[in-house]
Image (cartoon, rainbow, N blue to C red; front, side, top):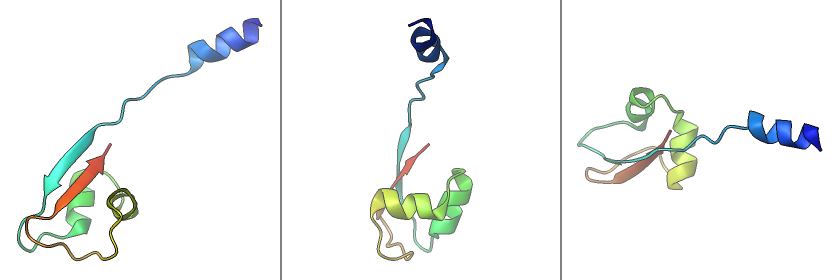
Length: 64
């Protein structure tokens, strides 16, 4: 029982921050990823993108 209590104390809850980014003309997914310290794959999965080409004004969510 003491081990279970110890494990709970050791666990940390990390809150994810979600950022709404609006793509500018000519902006690349790779730059958005680099600027926000996430991978391109993360952005593709999170936003369910089927292409790496962004339209001006397209919303890209970033979760850190």
